[in-house]
Image (cartoon, rainbow, N blue to C red; front, side, top):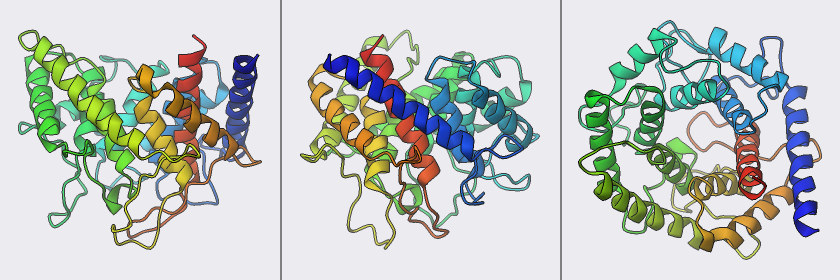
Length: 332
């Protein structure tokens, strides 16, 4: 009876969220909130990714958002920037989410569009560290770019020797970059949340690389890396169920919301859910359900870096991903 009630609550929350997104859809097929287009492509890529997890590809919103991404968001090179701008620097994080979402929804496949392959091959790092093309020289590197890069390369590119070699180096880099506490750091450039980096890295490593000679070593390293990261996330859960993902010493007066921190944490935990984390995940989902607004959205707080903006769309996409992933896990 309790499980049935939870199922209906989840389903209602998902439907309300979809209603909110549809209510802010423009003629191009993009979801826009309050006319703010600064992270337009990034936000819509994350919305499409959340929709792709549902399994119901007949949702009209999928066709509209994917059409926007393919016709307005994608550049001639095949890459995506975080905003709609032909001359803007490419963003491997936005490109990764968009490519994977489009693949999940059947809008592209591994070999269909040569532009995609050419762009991804051109970004494969010889050092293992995927680069953000808009990052200035004086700005510190953050490992989330490598996590996102690994995610898309391991899912879309043929796993030939060139790709495997690059992925192996990226894997080694992320193993070495992990802090003793289990995280990969925190930066105002990247939402000021430990969980943003953790989710990005674990998402990149959740797909098998397929290194024949080192499969056992690869798996053991992954288990250790995942366990340390997920333990870090669990330790930052409150009694109420939300997760504390920020650091008071980041230096920015702006912060993303507890809802967005919690959604990012849950998405990390749900990539490879552990039995011992079941209660923590359930508490987090319950807290997130209670925080949904009457409109069907979740508050996102303020993006903490330079050009500050409200993050309600990204928070809603992230919460929707977590709810759909949890529902799929619980009610197979």
